[in-house]
Image 1 (cartoon, rainbow, N blue to C red):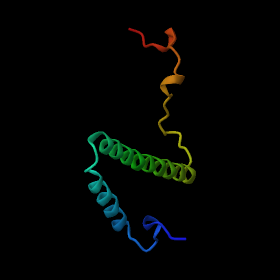
Image 2: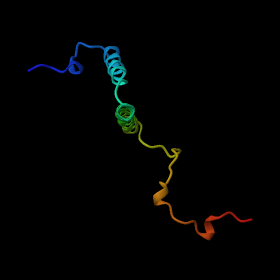
Image 3: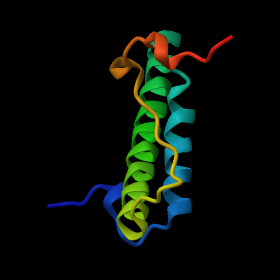
Image 4: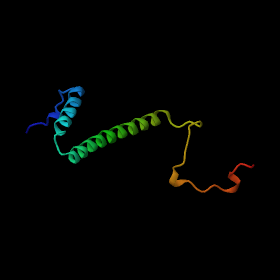
Length: 91
């Protein structure tokens, strides 16, 4: 069984980034809608991976430090309730 060139552990991160750009460069010869869809999909994959890593790092920091009484806390828009008259400042 052969390994995929991207799965080769001997390649550096720079090699893999170069491979990504090489493949995108080759794909520019496709029809415009196909090329744009491929670019969009590539950007989405990178963005999802970055988001997942950011969330994982945030969880690790939260587990290490825990919450503090001075931490900011917000209510998601969908869970907010209408303000009551007593909540509004006078004046």
